Length: 406
Image 1 (cartoon, rainbow, N blue to C red):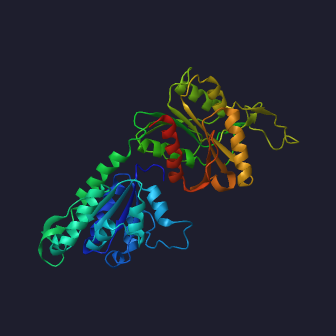
Image 2: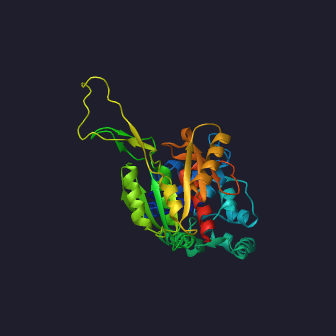
Image 3: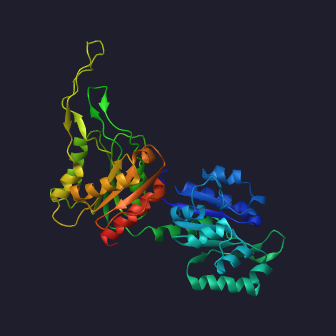
């Protein structure tokens, strides 16, 4: 999941040219992007959802009232997408966009888009040249939220030739790439260090004390920060996740190894990064002494394991910084009701002297692709936000960018 460069919502509407959207999807996936496919009901008459789903590796969304999805589907897709691309766009779809309509999943997602919307018109030449269509196109241009790609002159499904043929898939994919490059700049020039995953503290050469962290939240944060233009160094505990594109990775195993790696990255004055996001679940304790050989189970009674406290890495760094850099983001992983999680995070914010705490409950986060978090700072706590970890990573990074003055 997290290794994708950007997220594109690809919406297909009911035109004969819909089959070309499959090639657009293939080109975007080949370029390393995650493609979220949407289809209107009429689009499914031209292209099978199974085909599009197979290319994208994602289920096709067709119904904004899908009862199996928690919350508002169009809002969730718009939150995740860096660009919404409508390929092909019919005359009817363009008319509804110009009127600000939101009467199906595609138009609702376009209206809710946080980034640019790309539209690739496809229709008969007489429909394209009709004054109503040209008025709608002009209205969209005035709003400045929609980029048109095409149409071009060429043969259409009826055999007629004229302006109305959809632009070629390669040109559409290229235009989407251009828009993606323009959406990824709010963290450009910033150096962000992210930690992820558990630490393993050895008992002997075979056994260790650890925790259930998968590292997925930290890897999502690293991937999305890189996509937004940051130079990202990911300090990863022992996890089986691919390195996100554009991210420099340092692998560690123990809390002491993570401590040493962070010291090298931040330097003695802690100014080696603009922000540090400590998503790693660093073990609070380690065995006081590790056996150099495997402890045998037939050695009589189980040996006692004395524990020593691990260093509090982010509190150490906070205590050493002399100014406002780096921005420090910590995580509070707790059990209990929401109010207990928030209370603990608020206490942790003051004790560790950090800028932001991401509060979440263990049963909703460990090992999952989704999470539910609240952001706690000196002003108070946000409502809990639920969603895909990539989506939540962007919400956390929005706050980091604000703190950095981006």
